[in-house]
Image (cartoon, rainbow, N blue to C red; front, side, top):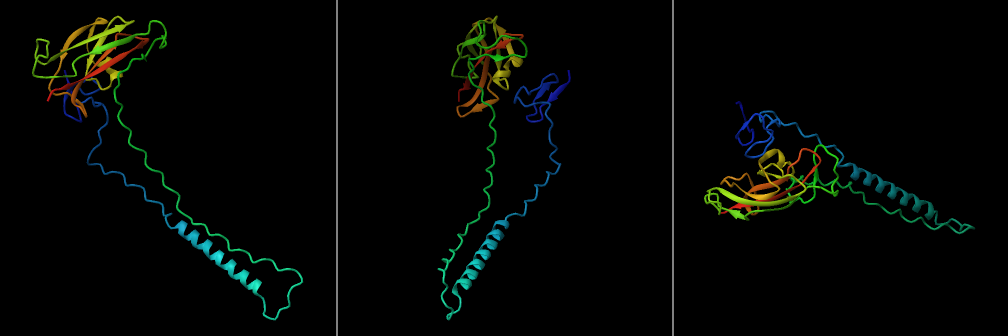
Amino acid sequence: MASLFCPFCGTENPTTRQFCLRCASDLRAPVRDPNTPAEPAPAAAGMANRPILIGGAIALVVVALLIGGLVLLGGSPTASPSATPSAPAPSALPTTALTPAPTEAPLPPTEAPVATDATTPEPAPTGTLAPGESGTPVVDSLTGPRSASCNEENGTGTVGFIRLKWTASNTTGVRLSIDPPAANKAYDYGYDDYEAIGSADVPFTCDPPKSDSGGAYHLYVATTVHDGGYFAWRLIKVYVKA
């Protein structure tokens, strides 16, 4: 059978897969040629000096108005007083400080979605059963060790395995998945199917593809068995002991 190599980590995958077995990268995503020059950044618009020119023009107009008002109101030293009271001298127009419009701050980078422990059903591709109706499937619990050793039997009797337990309602069974790319996509990456209530010993290797502030871990997801309608899932992380 032909193989498909991951363009990101180099792992060999079957050609039928969409995502890498090791790093979960999209095997069919286009890869940019590093020899292709990047597109030049657009030239900045030459608008930086416009607020300064506008402010200078306003200042010149204000000075001209003040000088004209002083000349008109000052008059000649021998001129006779007017019969009507002279109008008060116009006050100087207030100057307004012009500042460039604030530039919008760049949007923060979008964080990758973090898998969470879901307790509400999610819609499957087909079906009419709405969440909350009688008979909605749910994974009531999924338990396992907080951490385990990849070189010990962890109470299972087999080195490199751990034991998971679960209960589910309104479903014929559950499908266990190990290290899927996302918890709500785990059904397509199933390890094996089991009864709705039970336990199983599953692999726990020394090279988990996922990690967070707690260290490297394997992601285990239990999803209700389905072929339509609605399904539910629950996850746990099991960290590799240092």
